[in-house]
Length: 102
Image (tube, rainbow, N blue to C red; front, side):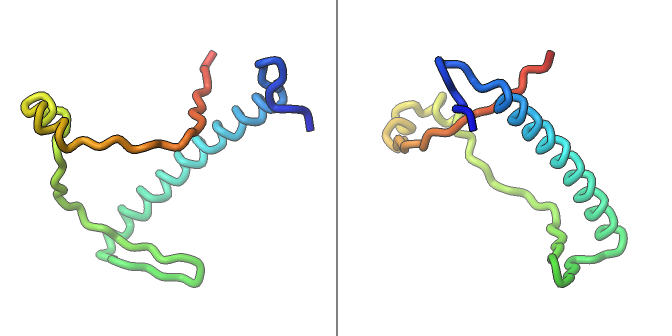
């Protein structure tokens, strides 16, 4: 296998494969979302809370309200208090992939 990066340039075959993988993931996520939508509608229509097979378990989760904390507003209105309670954490390195559409 050729190196992925040589002379600060990406291997063209690697780039092509990576783009194909990213596009396939996007396509599969759309299919997954459609399947989930169909399942949700069917389970709601038939008043089913849980379905189990040998391979998987599907559980219907009701809508609910969730409390959230408006960090941005709190920071704007209470800067000193915000600074007193803020802590820094290390985030491990990662790779962000963005496909440039032509």
